[in-house]
Length: 222
Image (cartoon, rainbow, N blue to C red):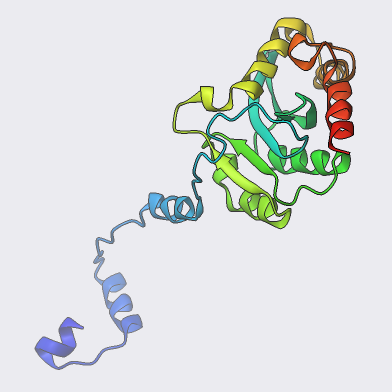
C-alpha cells in the first residue's frame, strides 16, 4: 500500500516477500491475541435472574428443582457429582458422576432426570452461575424442555441451600474417600442416592422418605 501511495509502484505481495527473503528482511507482526477467541465464547454465555428467590418450600413435585456440582476426592483422584433435586419432595430426580468436568456431566444429568419425571414444561430449574449452567448447550436443552432457568446471585450459595444440603449429607454419610476405583465410587454414590430417595425418612417430610413424600403430594393434587 505504501509503495502504491507514495511511489506509485504497484507490486504483488508475493514479489515483496521474495525480495524480503533475498535480503534477509523481516517484518514485525503482532501475534494474534489468544484471549479474543475466549472472550467471544464468553459472550455466548448468559446469566439469568434469581426467579426462585429462595422459595424452597414447594407443594407440587417437579415444579421447582435445584442443580449443582460437587467434587469427591478419592485415592489421589477427583470425581465430580452432578445432581438435580426436587425442592418439593427432596428427591434426587437426576444425577451423574464423572471423572471429567466437561459439559457432558450436566447434560447427562438432565437426561437422567427426564427418564424419571413427567413433562417438565413450565418447571423451574435453579443453579449457580457456573460455567456449565451459562453454557449455550445447557441453556438450549433447558429451553427445549420448556423449563424456566433461574440462577443464584454471584457467590451466594445460600440461594441454592437444599442442593448444597444434600451434598453435605452425602459427604457425612458416605466413606467415599476410601474408594479405590472410580467404578467403586460410582457404586457407593448410586447406593446412597437410592437410599436417600427411598429409605431415608426425614422429619421435614412428615417422617416420610423423599419418594414417599412425593407420592403423598401427588395424591393430594388429585
